[in-house]
Image (tube, rainbow, N blue to C red):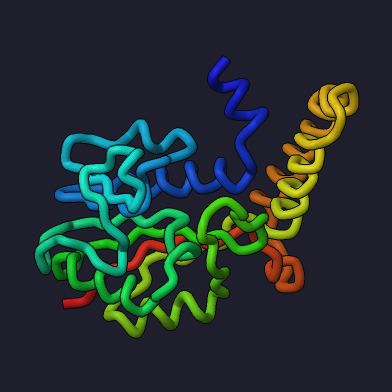
Length: 218
């Protein structure tokens, strides 16, 4: 039933993000700081171990540390990995956020992040911005990071499929259930085809977001 709920209710972007994180498992070694992860979604959260420290601004979520990424009460050069998935869209002072990540990471440590792009904004929280590939690459370079992996999380059909799913989720019940049986399988096939096909540059301009693995330089 859990797998069925995951298929039915999680967005394609969330599934892509879970796959991206699992593909990066080899980097999650040593002391890990998971920022903005008090309310984690998806299935990768089940991978977290005892060496993970959860940071969040919402104390009701009971994180290990209540703090923002712009002001981390953590020693310099103290962690091997920082995970910051879907965090920087909510960060008002990007420069301070990236600076703090660089300060806290050990030399050669890894910053593993994701950020949404063509997705619905979060109207209930302080969703502040979307970053293009150019801007994200520049910020990482400015704060002493070398990019190991930079990946678009799907392209046009992933964006369109997620928007279509959202419409289905909010339509009236008879049509919703019919769409689960008829439209969802078509969306699944389109997203799968897109992931296995070389997409031309025009369609690459559309993406649900970006996934990045960056390494702090010595």
